[in-house]
Length: 229
Image (tube, rainbow, N blue to C red; front, side):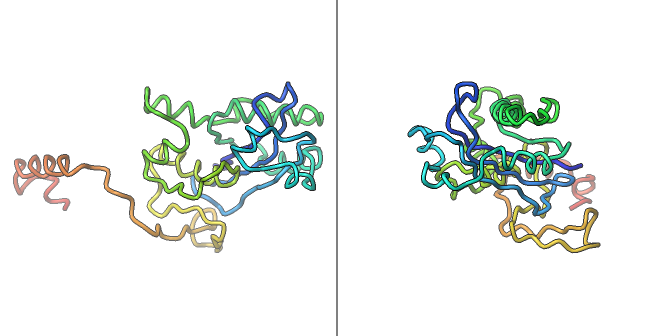
């Protein structure tokens, strides 16, 4: 199953009042594993960057002035995502902007059913708890120390790890790397992920581990658990 983990940066909150997309970043997953295939594009919004938006992502008028306009990259973007599911944190925001840009080009709209909203998943799993991308990184022990400003591709890479935790935990060898090598025959899909550089931190507290050990001790040496160790 092909999925695209996606993020955008914009000039503001509402395309209907003149805000535009200035960056798209996307990471391809196949069977919940990264393929190393990504999409990244800075976009000239054809308008001035508001200061409050610049403070979020650091993309200013001078930097974006020589970048392509959305009308020049919209078709290539649609070709990249195809009919894959789009994994997005707060999908309503990004889909709203993408469909506005596509509509202005008279290109097909992205159906809502194509999106998987990780924000909605997180709210359902952790009701009442913070579910921003940074908060979820802290919860799952995911390193986001390089995320001083929002950036679409970096946020997509981080979201891919968060997404796999939300749906049941990362694979033992899961890693996102722009330098991943693809070797035919290594695994179904033709790619074997590199080993995890550092083991995940333990999820159990010392008190929970001690209580578990005490419980197992009560089962005796003939218990199935003891035989499986």
